[in-house]
Image 1 (cartoon, rainbow, N blue to C red):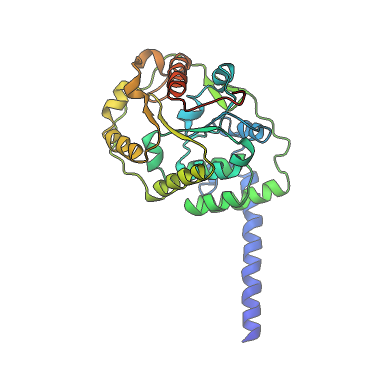
Image 2 (tube, rainbow, N blue to C red):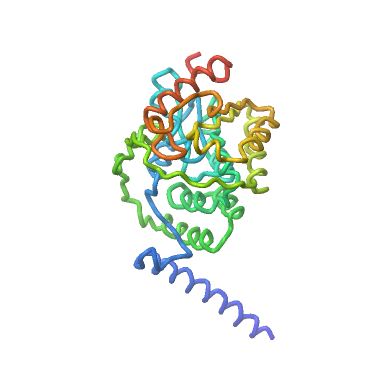
Length: 315
């Protein structure tokens, strides 16, 4: 019986080693079409790699921006820095509250922001979080917060990518990777903002869906609030402008407005506060072009200062 147990344990260990070796070899040499259950993409869409390299060298800021692509394409850190507020943008593609929570836990103690602005596009509360988890595994560091995040979005692709990422980072597979600051019409701006140098909105209208928030995303959102309250850091909720056409089709806006207001946190829905033109201020149905970003950021800065929600380190 003892021999059987030993053989079984040895077989399990051998299978585990074989699986990991096969996983590494498969990912290194096979095309993405042949890897449906793993996605490890250094320098992914949205300049995540550059952003996470820079944030590690950043300390003591006034404003931290977090959220999805509406954050890193909507909050121009250069604009806020010129206005006297040192800022950093930790937005990433499809970032949901689960990833926002992990990033706050990882970087709050070094960034020490005086305020956090969370861009609350409703759809992020309805995501499974897998896409953004994969993005962070590949482009940010791996630590206890990574594993906590992965456990909340656990599936085969996340599991495989986490194993491969651990091996890749341990042995420095991509240590010499350099991400260009300009990719096609995307330009990375110091502080985490990505400027899309596209001004014409050529997007075809899409049909809106009635979506329901995931409980795990709501729990992560509540955790974010608790983390910041425990540090006496104000959390400000901002719904960045989307096209009027798209906003009018989204039947769940009212429900999410109620959700945000129930938190008793400062909440500003700029779809109701600004009048923008779909064809002039957006490059698709729900992302601002540089002209729209400038108008939005001016209005946001005025709103935050008038409500005394932000102060600079020089104050």
